[in-house]
Amino acid sequence: MSPPAVVFDKVTHRYDRKEALRDVSFTIPRGAVFGLIGPNGSGKSTTLNILTTLLSHTEGGVQVCGFDVRTEAAEVKSRIGFAPEEVQLYNGLSAREFVELSAALHHMDPEAGARRAEHLLAHFGLEDRMDELLGSYSKGMRRKSLIAASMVHEPELLVLDEPLEGLDVVAQRIFKDMIREHAANGKTVIYSTHILEVLEGFATHVLLLRDGQVLGYGSVEQVHADLGLEKLADAFPNPSGSRP
Ligand code: ADP
Ligand code: MG
Image 1 (cartoon, helix red, strand yellow):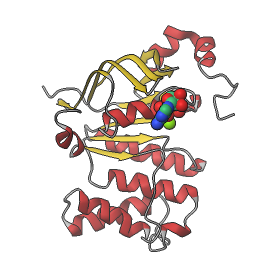
Image 2 (cartoon, rainbow, N blue to C red):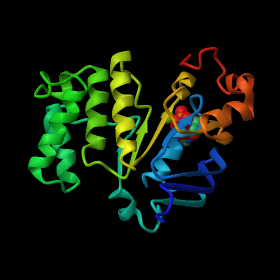
Image 3 (cartoon, protein in one colour):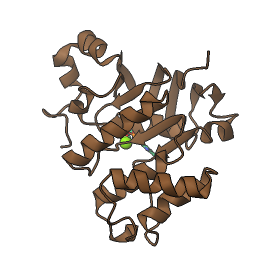
Image 4 (cartoon, helix red, strand yellow):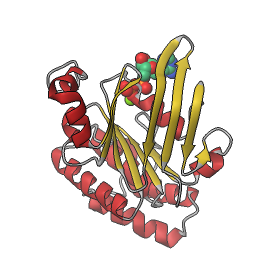
């Protein structure tokens, strides 16, 4: 049997003095749509940056597809697609060029890369605008381009940090369909969000973080049952769970 998509074993991370994660353990099985949920500052981006090898954690073990993020970073990187929360896009490239560049960086055949780039961007409703420059795009259009670039090579593990930021309701629905399709092919998706409602009817598994610690973990139903709605809401200081 192939190893799990992600294993975190008692992971602690400190930025100078600030402890961002404490003793975090969880496993993400292959084929999961894994929701990493928690309020702003709870440690979601830190977790994702560690498992994508961008950040070296302080203590504990982290494996991705059976490879150690510290000692086998190249193996890890070749298996993932990552759309970070904060990223500088190339404003002088069109969306099409940007997604094709991502395909090339992942060693895709140029024609296959071009076809897939066009397919993904069209899926997101950008069919008539994919030759315009990213610098002229809205926040939502930039987010769509970034997501398309992260999944163009059909990675074993797709990692998306706050992917729904800036997307309208229609784009969110399209996005969810694309993610489900990705996972239906046996691939794994992990995404973070601070919006509690995104739990519903989408993620197969959930990890709830608060102040760098695991508050709940398991299926959506399990986390609901374990914590109860009150405690779940308690993890999100403001009423809707959306941004203050
Ligand atoms: P989230 O993505 O859930 O909003 P983060 O992982 O970005 O949370 O941050 C977790 C905690 O670590 C926060 O308290 C944040 O202020 C702190 N933090 C994040 N990045 C840094 C950094 N580069 N240096 C110092 N502290 C940081
Ligand atoms: Mg974050």
